Length: 519
Ligand code: AHR
Image 1 (tube, rainbow, N blue to C red):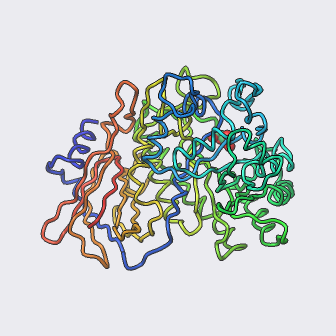
Image 2 (cartoon, protein in one colour):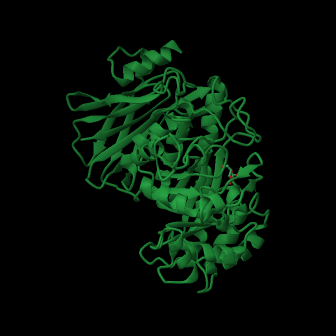
């Protein structure tokens, strides 16, 4: 581990001689003459479910709280999310969405009913955070609303009413009720989930049963706010099973004028096996490699479902929306049952970067994604404890990747060989590049190998590049975490490539994620 820390420091800032083993010749070529698809900023979406301390405590503290807030919403959380330019937030679930009745969450807060949250610890749901609070929250963050409607235990009428309540500019009974509740203007809803995991917690429907529901909800849950186009996302596959993909895409191909969708959801967690048992901290290299291998399976999932989609939709009109992804690990010992609380380590930073790289490589089809979940739940960006807040390694990856939002993908060729741990063999490095709107080239490099730093010779076709500077996320150990007591153990440090003659070389630390601008 000393070796890891020494190498981390070497790559981050301090110059030191690399050992022979670190010096294998690695070439990375960026071909700026062959730009690809635009990387939709929505792949950096977040997910906020009424689950554990995700909403209550994590986002909502109430206007009377001592914790600094704006209309009940934590200022520190909003500021942190603004800094990573969150494009959209999916809400209110998850499994919670298919049992959520929106009317419980409007009107005077002290009159809202207490209901139950049977999926997540069986706790009381106070309904204090409802439609208006959520829309206020996303507007404070500057994100779009991604609302999931209740297809499981709700009705099409209830969903249609919610959408009319949210979006109509006309003076209907529902619009007047919205105005009476404080918001005369229609709200913008950019994404609408037509159910959640309808193959599981959302109703255990067969693909054909779901398609019958889909046609009805896609017809009646209408967006009336012409200022904000709304993409409707159908429930899609659970992992590798293509049953839903086939059924939904076939129905869409043969659809009538009466309904349409713009996206198909895919859920896949990095979990290895259920129930989640991999430790969030205190793990060794074997668990590290196993989790990274499992997360790289996202590549094959996206490829598999995209191939099915291509058969029905060669023009790629329907987006693949990976609206639940991330590491699902064993819960923090002592945390409440069903709250899905887990620490977040340097390994999770790599999990995040590898998935984002996969989505970027499939940018033409993967046009939105939502990591699960935003605050205090699963692979979170942020932990809160009363007035304290800590940013996780995953947060830092999202921050470093901001330049990739809406940038144009540029192909990368890499000769880095592999990293082996026991019988697991993984790519030693993983990289993506993109050109932003101002024309600047960006490169993200993850070093999966926890034992060897890597020195990469960079070359760019179609550009003269003489400077490469950015940041690297390194850690003393692969399971290093940030805590309330030590919040900056894992934090980005400056990183620069070396120029000798015309040759640019970049040294990246073991188990690190780096993002640099090439100028
Ligand atoms: O993110 C936690 C849960 O995982 C969601 O509620 C559900 O959709 C999925 O199974």
